[in-house]
Image (cartoon, rainbow, N blue to C red):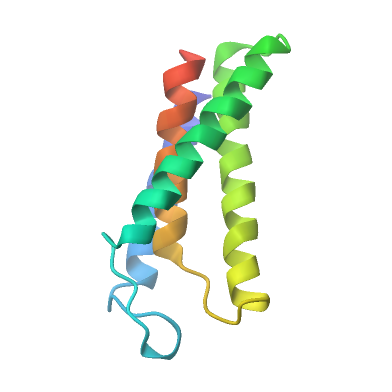
Length: 115
C-alpha cells in the first residue's frame, strides 16, 4: 500500500513540475516553488495529514491504511482549496501549491501512522 501511495506521489510531483515549467501561472503571475505561501501549504497539510491519520488509527484502521487515509484527506482538502482559488477568488489553480500540500500531508501522515 505504501509503495502505491509513494508511486502516486512521485507521478503527481513530476506532472506538477512539467505543468509549471515556466514558473508562471495564470495571466503571467509569479508562482515560485519556494514562495512564502508554500510554507503555509506544507505546514497546514502536514497537520491535516497527521490529524486524519491519527483519527483513522483511533478508529482501528491498519497503520498503512491510516496513512493512505491521511494523504488522501490532505489531497482532497488541498484540491478543494485550489478549486476555490480558481473559481471563487478568480486567481489560478497552483500545481506547486498542490505539490507542497501532498509533501506536507505525506510527511504528517507517515510521522503519525508508523507504516
